[in-house]
View 1: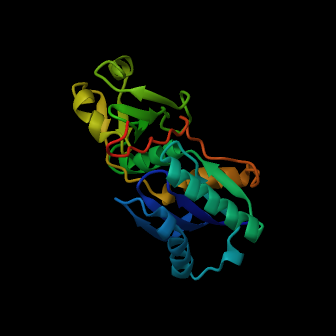
View 2: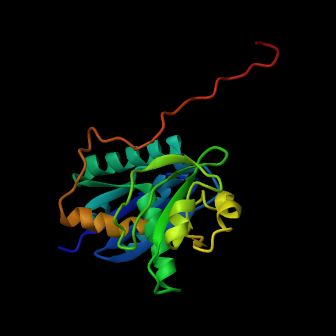
Length: 234
């Protein structure tokens, strides 16, 4: 069976929806630079289905980016994926946001160079902190996902040994610190739902599906709401 899969990416300020049939993207709608996921996500899904002339009844599964990333964005994406899966009676495949970013960077790098590199995707957190991990060029994870404060020493040992490709929306703020290393490479790979496809296909083939009732986003850090400040009160 060549599955038709709906892909949802809302972990950052990019709202992105893709539709695939087997290994081909047949519909894509996305918008960057805003936090309008609650308003845009369902219309984007509807538009992508219309692009591909596909009805929801013809969709075989939903892939959703589960974090780390924006607390609100992840909640919107996962709850929407759950609602569609429950209504249509189809499975959900949860894909790590960093894996999707790394997959997109790998594709761009492979288009310009045959040299394999380790891939370090970064999601912007506060100040010089990023959510990150490492993948080899075959997309095998090399370490656990973690939050790191980036300074000139954070990746020094790794960069002394081999080329490393940094990517993701946390990369630009770290670039000046890391560019002093000859082995540091950088690529601007936009976050997109279409990059969830390879992992989603692998999970589909392995029947690696989530329990729709109970799975949750992977926040990495607990959400802490800012305390409201009322002028004149302490």
